[in-house]
Image (cartoon, rainbow, N blue to C red; front, side, top):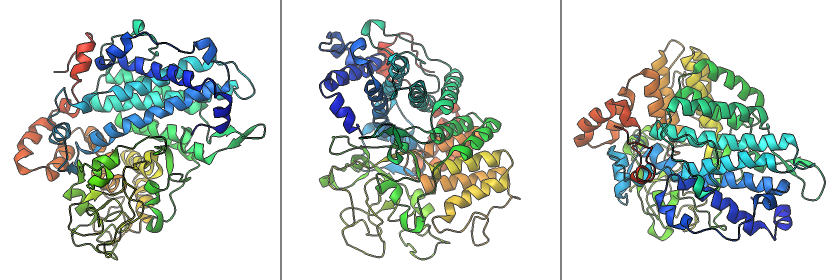
Length: 546
């Protein structure tokens, strides 16, 4: 992603600059990770001083890109915590102890998925950039407008990280200053989640004000700027800000405020759906540069040794590095294809032909088109659709270990269903149904209010009946994309009842676990993770939750 001009202009200084920025990130993690202590006890050497580093546009650009790089590190936690706690996946035969704890809702404070290191690393990268971007001298390539835009993008990253922390832990330490010196590490107590989310909302308001509708970059050979579709889907725009704002406000049941954000989205969005879903829905996960559906992509480059962890987690092919740790649940497969393993390839009234078998999930390696074989999540390892009627033919799958599939941080399909949820809660049922139909129409299944739909809803349906269909549709459209657990929790918060969450998880859990899950999840405190033991040992002001 680094601009070629940048490589040339900073050739002599890039290594020192990188070491400095990496140190900043590691020092931020020191607040939370005692494992770093020995490394940090060693006095760093060969570090570029601030006055030498913060000289021109390219230093600002470098801080910006360093911030975005931190998104890669949150993908595994996002996927595991967003899916394995819910009903759309089950542990595979290769699942480790920590994954089994997550799936069974018996997560201990030593579980690796209770580590918030990746999120605070992202926050510290953002904090460092927010503090230091104003110190870079202004010039024609780095105006006040550009500086504010960069700060807005970094505030979005910080807001996203804190939103995830709140959804996972509830109350968390709130730190808005970079940690760039081990002697200045602050050991902070947990802040109320409402205060943290107030801060998130404030950051997002700034981001919306100063982020642009599209991303402009410097011309390679000519003076001035040019619009970059590639950077527009890899960096935060006004539409991306609206997406996160909408999700935060729905989490807080702030529907009137969400409606205002929706108006901002309509006025600033430049994205559309990814073509006709009957031919190109899979492009969302296989085309690295897709200029319509994604609002923000997190990219991985195999050539740069940036490895998306999901191939290892979901593939059952050891030759590709697959550990088969997570698999699609029967609940999920039978939502796509109700008679699985019998699948209709022509009847869109009974089967989700263009999102189900061979697209969201498939059979086992090496012939992923083999029906009835142990299923795998196909979105993260496949390169094209698997046809269930073509048996024992090698499928188009990613090359061994080349797990650089993009992670859709936000995309239009996700946002339209959040909008449907908002409209429904505001009593605008026809708009809600229209949003659902925008999703269903592009994949060739009957509209939500069509008489041919066995789960037909109309404006005469209750709020909860329509919400149930939205939740189901989010599963079909966003299955295995790290959303499901958070969707269930959010809907349970809307209703003031744990039933929707408990009933969903019991459907995929063994009967022997039902009584435990019923008791465990009835208490809303248990929707959140415990603090990790290592964080408690390091930080005397952080106390374990009851």
